[in-house]
Image 1 (cartoon, helix red, strand yellow):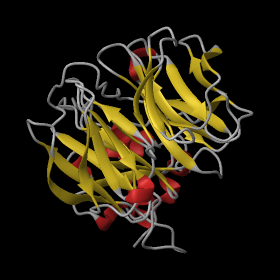
Image 2 (cartoon, helix red, strand yellow; image 1 turned 180 degrees about the vertical axis):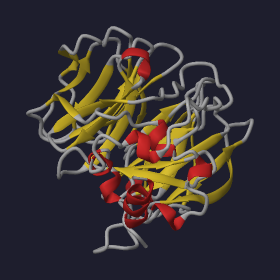
Image 3 (tube, one colour; image 1 turned 30 degrees about the horizontal axis):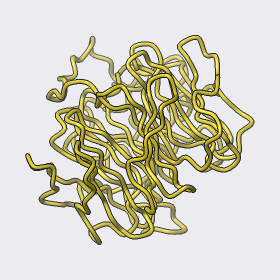
Length: 336
C-alpha cells in the first residue's frame, strides 16, 4: 500500500518539493476525507464578493445579474441583505460593525449598517475591485484597470499606496497579525506581499507566492479573490483551481474547482468559520475543513500553531479508496 500511494503521489507531482512528509502534507491538514463541494446557492449570473461576519453568516453578490447583496444564515436560508444595488465586486465587514462594499459598476465604495441600511459613501469616481479592512480601520482596495492599491484611512482620506508594482491587482487579504498585505495578480502568476507600516503605508513589495498557471497561458494564473486561515495559510482563486500556500509562501496544493466555471472568490464562514466557501460561476459552493478562517474585524494575532493530530500517513488517509486522492482535489497537481 505504501508503494502504491507513493507512486500515486509522485504521479501528481507531490515530490517536486523535497521532504513532503516533513512538511506535514498541508492539504491533509485542511481537507476532510469524504467531504466534497456542495452547492448552497444557485441560479445566479456570476457570483462574487464572498465575506462573513462574526456569526458565520455568508454574504455575496451576483455581479452580473444581481440587484442585491445576499446573505446565507447559519441555517442555510438565503435572503436579500441589501436591495437595489448592482455590480458589487467586493464585500468585507469592519470592526465598527459596518459592511464595506466595492460597487464596481457604480464606481464607488460604500458602507452599510449591520441591518443593511444607513448607506454611506466613502469614495466615488474610482474603479474598485476588491477590498480588505484592518482591525484599526484602514481600508485597502485594488484598482485592477489602473494597477493601483489604495487606502482609505479611518478619517476617510484616500491615498494611493502602490502603483504599478502589480500588473492587474485583484484579490486582497491580510496575515492573521495584520502585518502583511497580500494581493493577487490577475494578469500574472504571482501573489505579491507588502509589509504594512505603522502609518498604514506599504513597504518592501515582493512576489511572495508563485501560482500554478494553465498550460495554454503559462504566464497568467488569473489570480482573483483571496482568504487567510488562522494558521496563516493563504487561499487564492485561480484558473487552475483554489491554490493554497503556507505562511512562507510555499505552494501547498491546489483544490479542484467544484465546476468548470470561473472561480473568483473565497471565504471561510458557517459554524466556527470552518466551512470553505467559493464563488464559482452561477453558484456558491462550500465544503467543511479542518481549519478556521482569519477574521480581520477581530483583534490581530500571530498565526496559530497547527497541532498535529495522531500521525496520519497518506496510506491511512486514503486506504479505503486510493482513488479518493483525486476526489479530494489532488488531481490538479501535475508533475513538473
